[in-house]
Amino acid sequence: MELEEAFSLLSRTPRVLDALLRGLPDMWTRRNEGADSWTAFDVIGHLIHRERTDWMPRSRRLLESGETRPFEPFDRLAQKRESQGKSLELLLDEFARLRSENLDELRALNLGPEDLERRGRHPALGTVTLSELLATWAAHDLSHLHQISRVMAHQYRDAVGPWSAYLGVMQCDGHSS
Amino acid sequence: MELEEAFSLLSRTPRVLDALLRGLPDMWTRRNEGADSWTAFDVIGHLIHRERTDWMPRSRRLLESGETRPFEPFDRLAQKRESQGKSLELLLDEFARLRSENLDELRALNLGPEDLERRGRHPALGTVTLSELLATWAAHDLSHLHQISRVMAHQYRDAVGPWSAYLGVMQCDGHSS
Image (cartoon, rainbow over all chains, first blue to last red; front, top):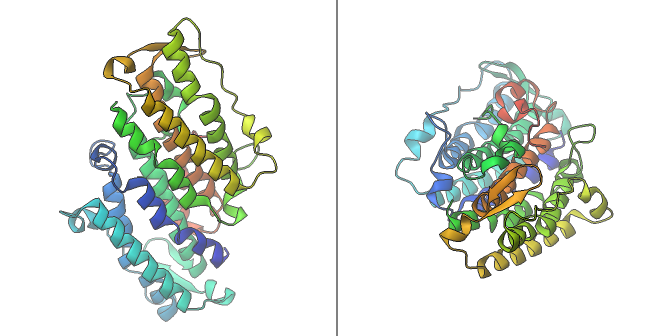
């Protein structure tokens, strides 16, 4: 894991989600895949909560306490509460601002290769390295872009008629939600 | 299928892919999932070939000939030939230009609800409607965004360590390639 490669991805995600979602009709952003699955709107709220409570707070905990104090568990339902009454546009702005602040903070740490090997403790996964945490931050963006594409495509499941057999995204069973 | 909803997505895709891919290190854009699977670079070439030979040419064929003349079959390997020696940046520009021209042409057709129900013949799927063809155009964008996210995440499969179990995209088996 090269830090600059992770940065290059992490810094692009707010613009990608903005280009995809800002101003889109609600049928694309406010519909889910049924039951209590997530909408694109829900995903942005989740990304915001991770910016606030996961990536940099866990990096700081790891650098300060090593494996002696595990990370705080993450609340996967926080966005249902925190996004209530907000517009998607507001959430996109909030996400972009938090991501930018977090990347500034990460850069200011001036991490070297030896720092990336430092270890912390995940409450369920056990020992993890800073390198794994930062790679997961970037891969987590991609996992939710993958999810948003699928949730949106789901809205056209009937509209595409027989072509659904040819569209890979329509075969995806939602392992990423 | 509401034409304006499809437009809203189709018009955004070039900017989404540009925000995601332009200037990214090659390790994200020029690596695949092994064997003869596609890179993000390959996918952009494929989207270009579809803009040239699929969506609007098939729409015209349907409107001109109905079910009497089937669509031309699509060449899924054309981009291997056509993208050779080109930069990703050039391909992103080419895709944006072709998409814009095609959407201008689609708008100029001034399609009404009755036009969307008109029928054509797919060489393998048989009878399809114009509505299904245009919905597939939009869903196809999402299917390849879904694929690109997965191909890129694959490059961090080892880097994320034990977190791979929590990342939906790492469980995706490539049904969309």
